[in-house]
Length: 253
Ligand SMILES: O=C(CO)[C@@H](O)[C@H](O)COP(=O)(O)O
Image 1 (cartoon, rainbow, N blue to C red):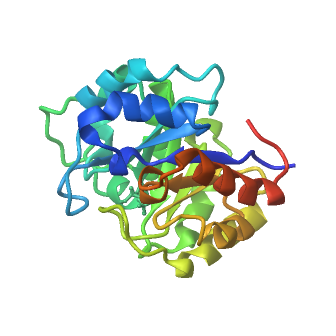
Image 2: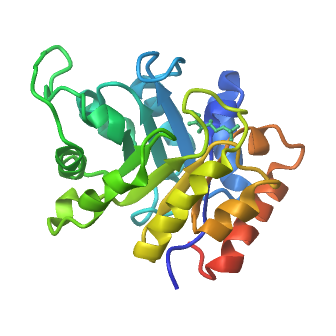
């Protein structure tokens, strides 16, 4: 049967002046998760916000009653040093901490943000560390990164080092409203062929116009920012996205 359809609107396109209400309305509009883009101005050429804002929006959305359930805060960490912020985001109410493969390779091992260290954290160590901090772990790849780097990580016999989700970026990370890169879909297809039960998220340029291709390739977690928050009928867009995925994977949360 495979994993369920999960629709995760990206709040990057929400009205930041009314963020709490935007989050609760989106869940009421039948979204499953909220996708929360954290950008540091180093890993990507843009900045958003950090853990204090996540703390403030958490009370507007009920915590999920099970792992990956409705209300999951899916934090997409587009930051240069993902290890430094794990504890802060756990305390803030993040459920799924999705770091970038490319950043994990260069992140310091320092647990205290004030500390500096030359030691590096491998993607596997990052996944384990996120799990130790009682969150689900996601690993994201940018368009420049080949999918092959993930095989060793996904085939790991150490359960704590295996990610709960893979995010394939379908735009260059940093901004909402970009054009969907269909060139990234063979990565999704290759992942789905090898891992029928894996949660595979796609992010960037997803809309009613592009969802069919992404769903056909095998994605089950759909991030959409401008398509949902820019719509007159956000619930209608969420429904179309869900139906496209469910046509291929007939189960839901
Ligand atoms: O991570 C990112 C951008 O880096 C995304 O989550 C965007 O926020 C998606 O926006 P749309 O392409 O759906 O407008």
